[in-house]
Image 1 (cartoon, rainbow, N blue to C red):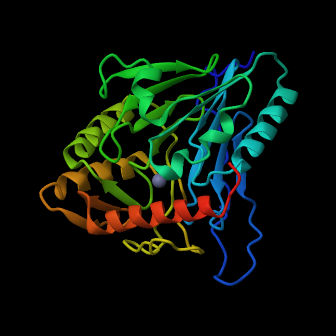
Image 2: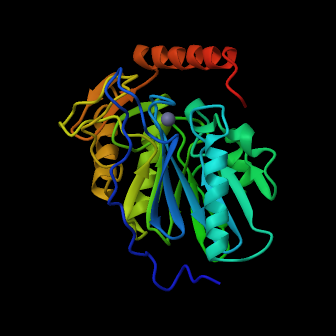
Length: 306
Ligand SMILES: [Zn+2]
């Protein structure tokens, strides 16, 4: 059995150049999913910008009895399923055991985080948690403020609710990696607060949650900023050569919280050095959703395999 407690948090590696698309018109050689091992039991994956401009990140955490996959990406295909199957086989080859399970859960229920769900439904020893049922699956009695435990087998995650960007958004703290996984609520990009009071309250709780835990990195699900303070890549960008790191610090999380409070009374977009806050369902956000829906319909018509 692997001891996930004694040396926690483990010294992981984020020395990685994420795939970030190619110049429009150039041949894209990126893999469908880039896999980066933070440590032997923790994988961070990024989807290719050629598959979806959203290029979301997903997380695969291995425990002694089961692994959890957080999010399934932005496309309705089986590319992630094939990648995860290989990673699980590799992990089991290094750490042999029988009856190993996979739980597929979600940081929240937006389309670019759940589109690959279907390909996991037929996977043996696997549970796909409906994106809107985090509360029920993780056993919250007092959503969203409660902190509940989820045990992967000696690797016990803390899960709490952070609605605001999406009604079922969760944050997860993993003591082994020290990651605080924040979904689309905190990341270096456009933070859409569709329900602003809930968003601000969640950030207040998240800062409190973070202050009592040993956090190595705050890990979200996208990169949309450039390295130039306050400057993001336009929505739909296929090429982002000058991205800042994915990982953020607890100080940056506190800055997001403080920024949210500063703009609470002002709907619209508010730029800060490391992120942009959208207070309320801005016109831009509505357009973005429209593009996304139209695009998904289009890809379905073209017969992308499920
Ligand atoms: Zn997203």
